[in-house]
Length: 205
Image 1 (cartoon, rainbow, N blue to C red):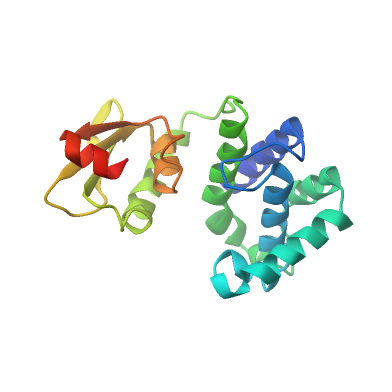
Image 2 (cartoon, helix red, strand yellow; image 1 turned 45 degrees about the vertical axis):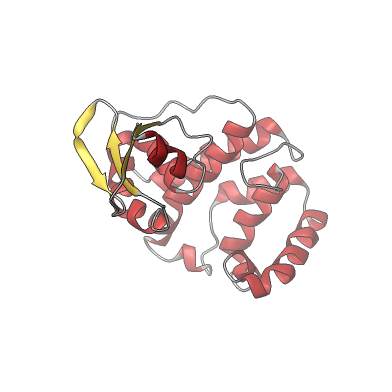
C-alpha cells in the first residue's frame, strides 16, 4: 500500500472539512497556509527553500502569499490531491512514497488536532508501519532533548527505541503514530505518557 497516497487523501479531506481560515498546529499557519506550503514543496522547490533556510524565509513567505491570491483554497487542495507533477522531484519513481508518507501524516494531524477532528480509520498494518518510521526518525528529530529519551509502543513493551542518550531517562509511551507526532515537535498535542523522575519529566516538558 502506498502510504503517501492514502495520507495525502486524508489530509486533503481534512483541509476541506475545516476550511481555509482554520488553525493548525503549525504556529501562525492557517489551513490555507499549510496547503500552500505543501504545494510549493512539490511544485516550486526553489521557492520552498525558505522552509528550511532562515535567510530565504521572507522570500518563501511572499511566494506563499502570492499563491494564496492566485488560487482559491479548494483549487489548491484539488491540486494537492492530484499528486506531484511528473517534472517535480517528488514525481520521480518512488519519490512520493519515500518523501511524503510521513509529511502528509504529520500535516494531516496538524489540521485535525487543531480542530478537534478524529483520526481517519486506517488499516491494521498502519501502526506497524508508523513504528518503523519512529525508529528511524526519533534519534534525529529528538537529538536536542535535555535528557535521555526512550520511546515505547504502548502495550508493546518489547518495542523500544532509545532516541537520545543521557544520565536521566524519560520514557515516552504511546501508539507509534502518536510517537511520530511527538518526535516531530507536536509534543503538547500527542497522546503520549511521559514516565521518569519528576525533574527529568519537567525538563522534557
